[in-house]
Length: 136
Figure 1 (spheres, rainbow, N blue to C red):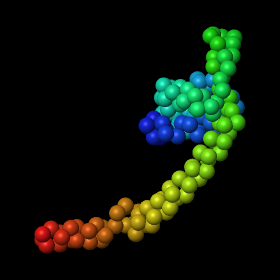
Figure 2 (figure 1 turned 180 degrees about the vertical axis):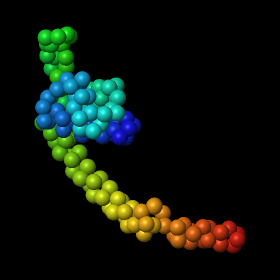
Figure 3 (figure 1 turned 30 degrees about the vertical axis):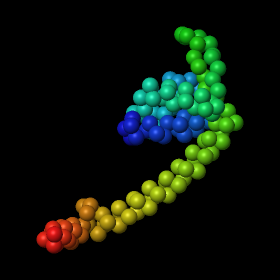
Figure 4 (figure 1 turned 180 degrees about the horizontal axis):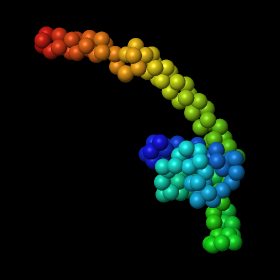
């Protein structure tokens, strides 16, 4: 998925990862990549984390690091768990919609012998467009 595709899904992805295990920004970026969101831009991730924290879904604490400066570790709040559950309900609805869409595409594609839009259907559409233009 491209970075722009992932942007709107960063909140549930981050909430889920933090629910599994609290983490700091760079750690979460690496875990997003392993989740399949490798194109998530760091700036987008940090903005999403700050937004989730401002909304009360995350809390952060500064943790000293042995090999560098202190890092902000993000943890899920009770409100964050409720938000994660709400996101999961919405994503289940989206999955059902996507499955319906893909099933319909599969049927259309099979009608065309696996090559997309059936030629007979395309010809019928072109003929109808032509008929409409001549009636004007």
